[in-house]
Amino acid sequence: MGLIKRNPFGHILIIKKWLIRILGILSHRRYRGFNELQIEGSEIIKNLPETNVLFISNHQTYFADVVAMFHVFNASLSGREDTIENVLYLWHPKLNLYYVAAKETMSEGLLPRILAYVGAITVERTWREKGKDVKRDVNLNDTENIRIALDDGWVITFPQGTTKSFKPVRKGTAHIIKQHKPIVVPIVIDGFRRSFDKKGLRLKKKGILQSFIIKQPLSIDYENDTIEQIVEKVEFAIEQHPTFLKVIPAEELAEQQELNKQRKWEY
Image (tube, rainbow, N blue to C red; front, side, top):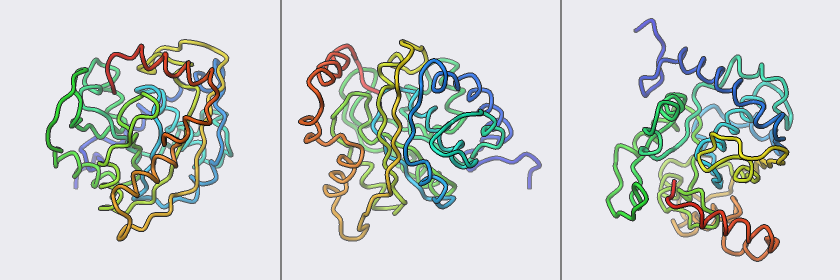
């Protein structure tokens, strides 16, 4: 057995730990200072098992969403309730925490590569690449890596596969749920696309209230629910089903539509 502890993907855990600490300290004021992160449901995090948990969420920026999740999860596990005050919760971060991300996104520059080392499970999108529509088969290595991550710990995924609002949930997420039978915890976020640029690296506006709602795990019949039924449950859980368009204030809907027009290519 080697003296250096690694996770199943070969990442050295002490390096991952220090990257989480440093990036967490550098990003903390983006959620508690320049802007305020309003959290609900953090008690759910503390009661989850150590492995085979899948978090599903809507998506508003490339990186700011998942960084916020690292903050919230670690703060909750260290005993904080609906707050990320006192960044010392990152001294002993959860190291078996992963997130699904597009391979092309995580290879664009030094910072994305560093963020990938923190816990990215990179996948090849089957429907889009470099801003163009494509159609290709699922890479079996990608789905196997997600299985490995679930066996080792928690996985965060954005089942729409894009930062645009109210896009359909990809069936791949439903297949993962049906096949691996994880506990599925929905998260609904808001305010991130107003706070940050599209990548979530540059602070665009201060004084924005960012909301982060953790919901109770989904009730799923892994044996009898169809893929279509699971997709619908996911869409409702992360509040991205088309029926939610009817309850969004007209001003907010117009703002989302304008932001979508400005986005030239999908995550």
